[in-house]
Image 1 (tube, rainbow, N blue to C red):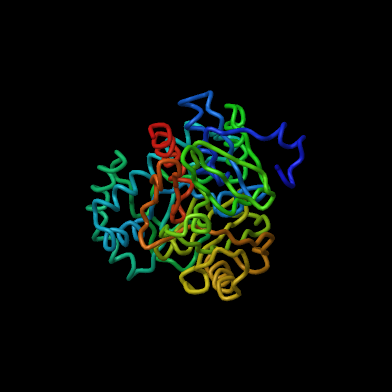
Image 2: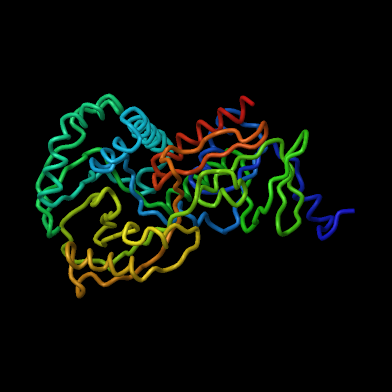
Length: 374
């Protein structure tokens, strides 16, 4: 007997899906698009527990970047040169793939370059490594002289040096998601939102997705792209949430700089949105409490961000804060994404370490190939 499920719902919505994707963020939709581009007749359902993908896809800062000098050097120290450069290359390839899919104007994809800011002592440590780092980046992404010392842009105070990366860009994450959603649906995919999957139950010939609404969802294969929340379904994964706070000011008359900016190995980041300032990060001021998959406010982090805003970018009178939110990224012991088959029918693509915009399109390609080959 089918309980708590009407005959109308069963006959209208019940389908044995070829593939179900849990998570409708950038990675989930990119995976669905890549599968349908390869096999247009595939019956795919993307599921999300929220009405929009709130984790990070619609709550990130909109940086289309692949790594600042200090971040890459820090990764080389901890991960080794080869693995770090492979990761940079994947980010770069993902961004190139993303650009072939998006409407640049609609997604507000703008190339104003990326900057990393330094005090004198910090810059001296980085400057000696730049020639070698540029050589490595040339091999990884095919561009010579990625990082060039430059003046600190006018209107930014309290820093003595800057390094410019002319290849970094910024975009509007909300419009990006709408574009990917339209593209996926136009290819014939389906999306159900407001459906919280509690358990993946694998059987001999299929996979059932157990959910709070008792809706029978059965598929041949399942892909998990819930990133920071993946451990709720696959406890064995080395992945957990990390909260990031973001502030956006009201429009500021005469804002003179444009671009994406990084400071302190990328823990502080800011950009312009037109003539507004977006500022985020400062997670390193309270690592312990920010290792969470819960949205919320940390007063210590907010105070640190406001102090940075009013010390370096504007004053309290001009830079009144209009928006404030938190987003959840996925981190683990390693920065390398987890893209693998958990079993013959269950696959996962998570732990993007705050680089979802850069990595998701490539991960979607890798997952599509993996799922269709199995």
